[in-house]
Image (cartoon, rainbow, N blue to C red):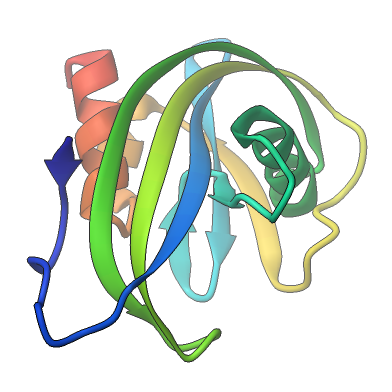
Amino acid sequence: MIRFGEPYKKKISYTRRPGAYAIIKVKNQILLTFQDDENQLPGGGIDKNEGPLRALYREVMEETGWIISVQKKIRTYQKFIFMPEYNLWAQKICSVYVAKGIYPISDPTENNHFSFLTEPAVASRILHSPADRFFVKEYFQV
């Protein structure tokens, strides 16, 4: 499994935090979310008793207001990170999917989230996360 970010540190007790994220195609563009002053692929953590696809549909709706159709899973990656919003050291194990944006039905329901469309080449430069940039570049060969 590919890893992004800091290496595993033996002295830290990590909590496993699975997540699901998507490259969402809308015609020749992709759907991104802007939150916490960062451009990101839509997605997030998988809640207890929730599968990755259910989590992905929920997170995309909360962050973008869009209905999507998941086409396939393309990769899984991990990163070891401190999550200040949870006061938690986490081993994030993230599944990355490709999906088709069907249509928006609302504004994002999470506060301070804004969705927008952009070209894959632009997204590969403006996404905050190195993992997000890597997967967009790899998928679209940009």
